Length: 231
Image 1 (cartoon, one colour):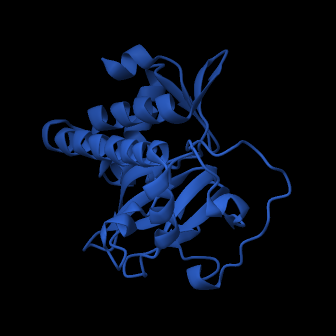
Image 2: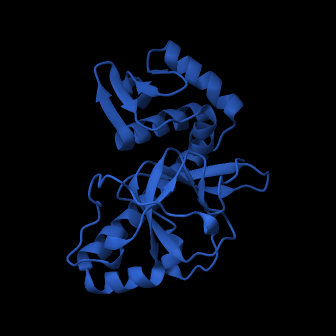
């Protein structure tokens, strides 16, 4: 397991020079975090680890992060991915005082830490924000439920194909040759996402490439034939 480049409590937020895209969450009012300084994470940095205090929710402004759990074996299981406009660390909203999950950057990530007390005040006066957060949490629960069912009733190849389609739908960019997943995912990242060993995932990826369903190199995965992945 990789380590955090700078301890979570010691990381200094750095102001972002360009104002990039506006936050995806709707608002009927100005919120206290509108003036907050975002934090920057590099690929591999952890937002938090199990056992850390759960005092904030992180709103992803750019980049992609993963939510995961530590396994008794010492490995990690990826539960979900989060992109711009989504949150990580939502357990802090439900009275959890210590983290039970981990959150890690899969790319360069800009995120805004939202202290729970501040967020509750905003939710009380902004029904649109409350609805948006509820939808994010519900969608994550739906994806986790779907993966739990797949993990019980489908083999590794089927889980891998469905994971590629899901990530492609959420984070893909259309190109002439197919749909490129705009997140750098290693074989280990994919293995963690489907609950399998990297040694199992690599031969499956090779086979899917030979079949023309995908293409990939060290920096990208390209979905060439989504129909084959779905079959």
